[in-house]
Length: 182
Ligand SMILES: Cc1cc2nc3c(=O)[nH]c(=O)nc-3n(C[C@H](O)[C@H](O)[C@H](O)COP(=O)(O)O)c2cc1C
Image 1 (tube, rainbow, N blue to C red):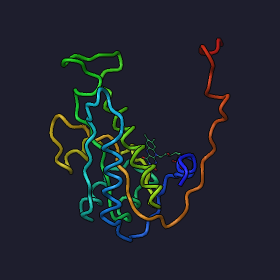
Image 2: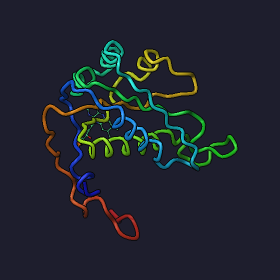
Image 3: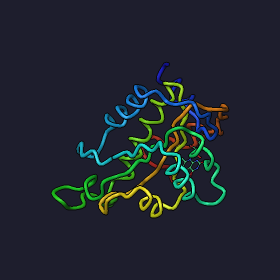
Image 4: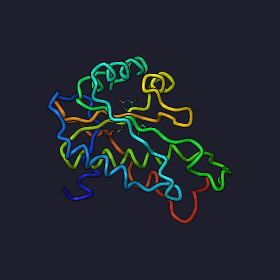
């Protein structure tokens, strides 16, 4: 698949069939996370691979009411939970290096994008899920104090095609040389 085809063709998939994901394909997706860029190559991103139906439904119960990704978490054979190690990304010699503080959200976001695009090239669906009770998910997964759960995604074969929500036109968000005066 051509790269732009992958970028434009990837959709958020919220309906899955239960077919298992081959282990070698899962490995490819994890490898793509491994090669994501990170602050000073600090690699704060970590992943929890969840296949246990009980844990998947516990994770689904953390979703905020009305989240359209609810059933995706139990239907898909795998849920990947993206976590970030705190106090690493965006730090230099233990001190925050920029006004942005901890860059773990950014680095895990880059890892998530690698994950989603790679999964798409292997015919697998994903949907980034950010609207849930993070503290509850951290308890369910037993993550250490210095680790934050950031986002999760089901991983599996889609039961339906997603349709592309409309995007802004390039002139609506690209400016040249300086931000336009009001
Ligand atoms: C940070 C982030 C959080 C998101 N959280 C959710 C979510 O909780 N539930 C959901 O169904 N979709 C969620 N999405 C998916 C977006 O709704 C989706 O990416 C957007 O509508 C564009 O559609 P597309 O991914 O098919 O291009 C999230 C996406 C991002 C990037």
